Length: 181
Image (cartoon, rainbow, N blue to C red; front, top):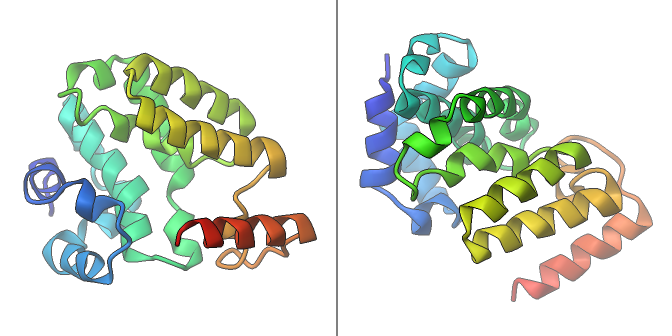
């Protein structure tokens, strides 16, 4: 079985932001080859022992929240572990795990809040990112929160989740796609 140390090493030592958020098929494939077996193991609940340490809790959240997006990009499975990642993040934060790890790793406890389709959770995420003090990450959190406040969901998830998009959501997605270029 994959260990939390394997996850932490792969995610933070071997790779960084240029890989995490680029949406690169090459990185996704490397993740699959190197450590992809962690996702099914963790999603089946087989990593409960990881929760004995704060780094282990962080590794479990990264697998559920990030690996699922990397390994199942564009499919419903990309979001299938979001609720479990959020619950684990809430529990970890309540025990101070986010404060006990290296500050550069702390945001990965907070990403499940950013990914939640709940305004209550989004508002809590704003508080976490404000306390973090990183304006760039806080800006991303605010944009996610504003999307949920406006639509009650993330429109870009509609297609993979077989949800119908409203005309307003379609216009929003077109506008956002144009901004990327």
